[in-house]
Length: 231
Image: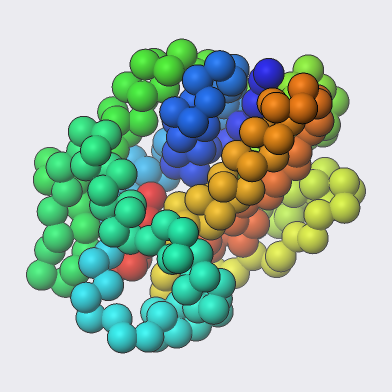
């Protein structure tokens, strides 16, 4: 059984690692169109990588995420900022919460996160194919499952092939419209749904292709610099 993860950013790496931890026999390949994976992680938080936020000062999610606070509240029931904090620490990245409630690696260096992801990818023998642009289903036709974690496309062109497959594409917004990004939280909702489908297919010995889009608004994937941002 093979899964293609299209997009070599934080969402793609996080999904690939968790998928291998849940289903070790699954072959996972990450496709990245550029020759540099985790590029946005490297520059996020001024090069320190703002992983999450303590939410200590947040009494209502609509204060920090007016565009989708209802969705975020529902997602928090499955995976929240505390889960994110634990996940990184359990995978070898000590974190620290600042006075402004932003959470960073103790090392104050985004490479602590990058090194964590790359180390886990090597441990689980996850293949990374750089310089591989996926623009159609045919490009990954030899995979049983496909997950798209490319984030947004400013002009929409990069997502046109998904629209042609019947997916609804949201128009991108600039970062000042969204004070909070929840890339990892959205990912976990998608991941849980994917895991259920994978387990079903595994048990029934059924081969199928699952197309899932993640964080289609450009701002959602690009807001790593905001105080409530995630990787």
